[in-house]
Image (tube, rainbow, N blue to C red; front, side, top):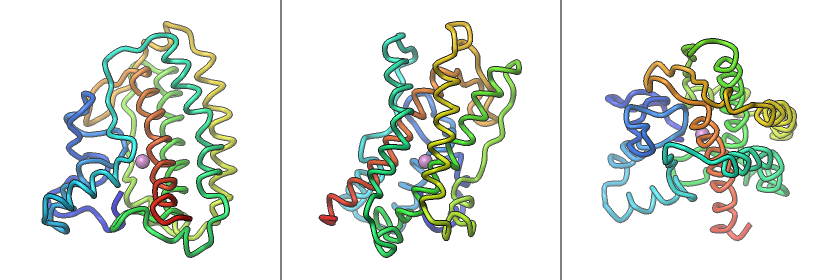
Amino acid sequence: MLRNGPSPGIAPIHRPAFSEGGFSRGVLEIGSAAALSVNTTAYPTETTETMMTDLSYPIGKFHYEGSISEDQKQKLIDDISRVPMNLRAAVSGLSDAQLDTPYRPGGWTVRQVTHHVPDSHMNAYVRFKLGLTENEPTIKPYEQQLWAELADTKSTPIEVSLAMLDSLHDRWVRLLRSLNPEDWKRSFRHPELGLVGLEKNLALYSWHGRHHVAHITSLRERNGW
Ligand code: NI
């Protein structure tokens, strides 16, 4: 979530000390306490830290109770199906200068957030497919902070990523809706987290899409855009 590279002593990108929802040894790919740790240095007062945490987590941090009902599962899939539309609405009408504005001090720009969502969800989609077709496969984490600094993430028109997200989520949601109860019991192995069930991963990405859309909508609200 930070624009600067990983700080010394903090495991880069995918391994922040995320302490809730059972992700105590790290996190799949979401920004989290790593950002807070860096902020502790950059913004030393407690008040400011609290404020920065709120800006980083406009819908709160990810929580997972450990099981979900069939109804909840359908709602989570619906959440994922709406992300392309909601992200498109969130950035609608923004100027280049607004797109290049960090969603919070020291945070990614709106443009980086927009490109990050398909970066992340492409990985998520692949993890589902690996989990469905192999026996507890070990998945490959990626350095999301460094991906967000690559040239394509910084300079590509956001429409390219919005269109990519439309297509990606179309495929992904078709896949999710096709799964039977046995499929949902499958897992993949995250090198840092151990086994991650597909249901938990579904909940995580429902949160993740809403989390990043809210970064943009809350910025617009604060700035009266
Ligand atoms: Ni993210």
